[in-house]
Image 1 (spheres, rainbow, N blue to C red):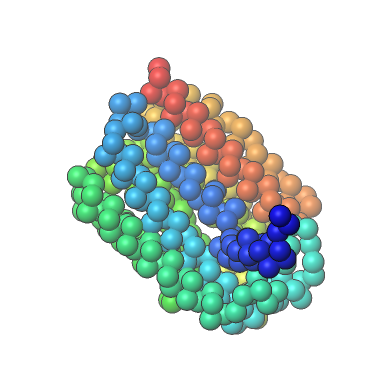
Image 2: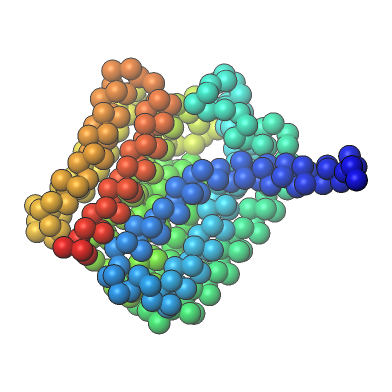
Length: 321
């Protein structure tokens, strides 16, 4: 029996709706942030990795993390469409394969601001619910973990919504904290402990996201300046911004080297992460030579995924040796 046109349209309509919201929340970036839990899991002692309590704790945290990340991405776009910065940075800046307009369903008219705003609120509530469940479930609740988790929940969405911290010059600090905390908080909830290894890998994860944003902000200077978003790229001269990105690159490499030289981590930690270091330097040198911030941003995504892969390899070797 042939399928009617109305029947065929139902799944297509559902897939289209899911696709719109998936692009709204930048699902690729959400998946990248979820890699933090892979780092956390591999950093655990082998006996702890398959513990029912540990796995449940990480699963509950992951459910909450998805909601928080959805809220961050959605509410950022809501602000961007309201103040015109996304129009300036995506539409007026011209089309480019490195930044396709389809990433912004609010700009294309596929979603309304009201729809996106309520979706963002619901996502944040979802995240708060599951992180509360995580805290109530886990037997590990040291004060520092609770503080980090609450700050992560409250502050992560304040980048361009609520307090709009990126509009008062605090966006870079917030991004470094939030991305790092996505590694540090679940590890603390799963074990009740902190370690030099997780602090180091958390900071490497954080700098990975910060240096993606740094080059993105460099591309967005005209649009951000027009709406009063005070990123470092807006507040400094082109030369000052290049120096700032160079300092971030240097700090990122120091996070890799200092723990090993100080004896907090094995001497071979930088050796395993050498591919990441080479790509990080290549990203900055390429930007200085070519001046294309979107290309540098694209390379930054590769660098970020490389540092995750190298961290996982190190964790597995560290516990196997």
